[in-house]
Length: 374
Image (tube, rainbow, N blue to C red; front, top):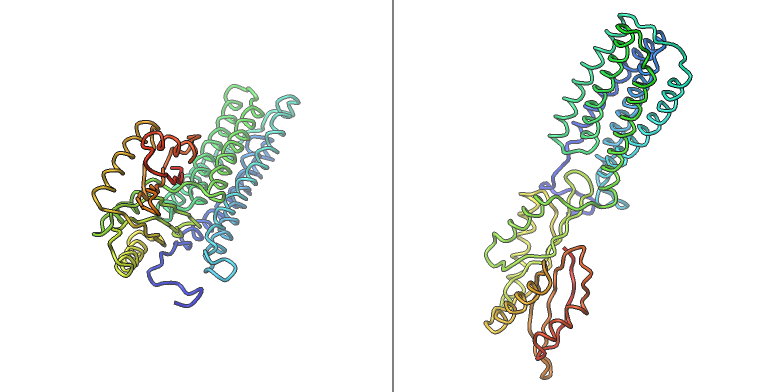
């Protein structure tokens, strides 16, 4: 396969779903912004005006989402051999920052309204009509984004669905503010504007955290790790698997590496053919580009008995510690034990600590210990 050419088995993220959903959101939010801004100014309501600019930020978010998906769908090239799919995370990050700025600006305006009391809103029937239609539109957008998220697993679609549900709450709050004035004559517009602004800020922070995490390199889903592990262990000739590492470069672009244990008596050709078959099958069945490292496993009884003793000792002495890559060699009369000890992530244990403990347990061997963290 030529450099930059895609395999026919390579999974593809359906970015067109996100593009269509983004265009739907862009048109709907532009209409809502114009309508709410008009009635907000006519009614003199800071809550409705804040909600209008919330829709403006949603429209900008939709535009950014469309642009992000367009960029993310570009194929891999020499400078970006893993593709451009992480652009969708960048799009979500920009959306979060924009939401935060809008929320902060209207929080300031709402607080000023509370203390300066610029006048009660001038409620008219058209305000209720526009806000009621807005709730219905946001419900439709939440449904479209939710379906798109289920189909693609895309973070911007999840963020947009969450934001649309939140907008239904925000607009309902603006309706409640108008109703309270209409029925009781109490002017709580600034307070409701503050509530809407705080909600926008809360949503922005949540989206910000969710978009930064995959850019930094978040841990893979346990379900995906388990699926890869079970797939590998299903092959005859595989004696064990460990050190599974999975990196995501956007939806449908996962890369995995694992150490596969095979019998030390297996030929290099047999081990190579086994690993090749596993790599092809995992790409086809799980959509993960997989590379394996082969570890020889000794099956002589003396080695397996010693391994069982050391496994039990380390597990009892250091909770949560497991052993793999175990082998015994004799070099110039020196009996050596090589092993990798996998310890909990938060553990402060070092290779020196484990080596000292093993030496005290059985001083007849020289121990070479490598530490992995779960």
